[in-house]
Image 1: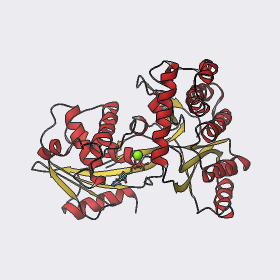
Image 2: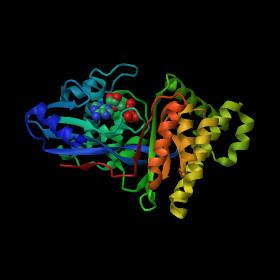
Image 3: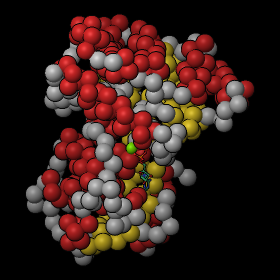
Length: 393
Ligand code: ADP
Ligand code: MG
């Protein structure tokens, strides 16, 4: 059964009725631009075919009930309760089960963002085929699906960017995860065969045709299923190094520096801070170069930029792990156009841009290389740039 059917079946199981509609939103991968978002720089993610579905219907009262195929039991609260539940105080567990805070947090944030929402209850049942915690943003997908359903059922007419901001607010303030806006924008603004360029300072966005489909290219996701215990501390340490580097350069964020500033940066800071700074500054430039190269020369010309991005994360930012390096090197040695780790690092997934006819060969080589190196089996599958949210039924 598809995730769409699962959402419908769960809705019927919980409510005894058919849903009024089913809405969905995609996960995403980041093509290039890593650890640039919180430095107010550039990112270039795209929406993937994996989606989260929300089957929903208005109720006659003011209760909100959410169910998920993930969870044992539905969670139900009154609309009046939302303002008491959220925002969740920093460092405190949400008062509702964490998974439900994504959906209920969207309801809360949407009511704050758009005036005139009716105090009308709703039943929502969620099912998804976005792998959770693999760096494909199942969180943005659930936020986008629920936001799209409520936007229509409550007749709010909010635009995609507003719904992305609602999702981010839910994730930051209801769930308590301090994430940027990239995931929600990538999911909400997805278009077939296009990536979304985001300027994280101005929030300006632009749809950039990738040409992958026309050129017969697929993106192979190689999920290492590794999650290192020090990822949280490592992430915080990287953010602090970036802030320190910007302060030494006398600028509000590393966005305001370019490659011409690197010699000065080298004089001003210790070696580790400098290498963190060099990753961010050169990565921003690589995002701009990737956009230009896609437009001027097509997708087969971006391979070197992807490879340079990986080397910068491995050597300067030091967030790769042996499993990610092995996935990247194996894909490249088998004919990938380019490859890099994607996401926050310390585990998670790598991506490779591969000709359709080589997908099987490259996937097999990666699948075999892992046990040969003593690593657990990776999860390997293809994606391509896909649609944003839609109503499916
Ligand atoms: P990622 O976004 O990389 O997959 P996150 O930790 O940001 O990882 O978000 C994953 C969390 O989102 C899950 O642990 C769960 O709480 C919530 N979530 C995602 N998809 C669903 C779903 N289909 N049903 C319920 N909760 C979900
Ligand atoms: Mg997430």
